[in-house]
Amino acid sequence: MIPNNISLILFDKKTWIMIAVIAAAVLLLVLYISVHFSKGKRKGRAAERKVGKYLKKLGKKDHIRIINNAYLPLYNKACEVDHLVFGRFGVLVVETKGISGTVTGSGKNLTHTIGSKTHKFYNPQLQNKTHMDNVIHHLKKGGFEKTPVNGAVVFSAKDIEFPSEIGMDLKGLDKFYGSLPDAGCNQDVLYHYFMKMQVRNPLKKMWIRTRKKND
Image 1 (cartoon, rainbow, N blue to C red):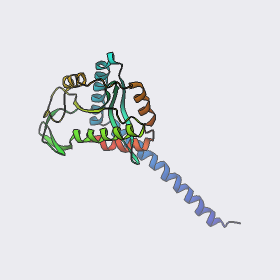
Image 2: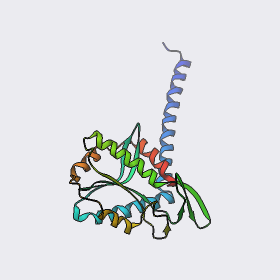
Image 3: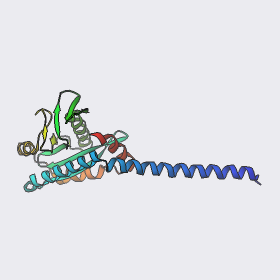
Image 4: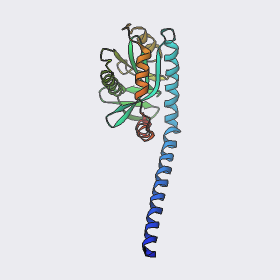
């Protein structure tokens, strides 16, 4: 027979575990809301939708396939790619930026100025190179190592100034897309291959979205 005081201790322990689980769930919910409904995040998602629609229209005649906001495995975590575009040209990896103002600098960190405010941010070309390397890695794993992979950083806002080596606007994307050579790739096969590997774990997605909050 278990003494009453021991039963009380066991009951209290279970109660505290339940409280901890509920608290963690509430914290994740608050974090999710703060990330997805912040002003910066709303602006970023709007820019991604704009570029996604533009890409769809751009490649309609070529029957391209697109995965927007693709979550691909990266070691024991994941990385979010704004747009994966599949066509006879291979794979186009697109990073979208919806910021306004002026971007200056070179190298790892750039300076973004809007009005009287300035802040540093990671060079999107280097960010997109990481995404491209990850795509190349998965292509090799799937036996598609000969598939060409190209990348593009697109600034979607009209009121933005930036060095040409950092990215392109929508008109530049149009020109760049038109320059991609036909490599005879099967866009449907590539599309379904990457769709199947997407990360579904919401905690991993949350970690990525939190990191990208200030992009």
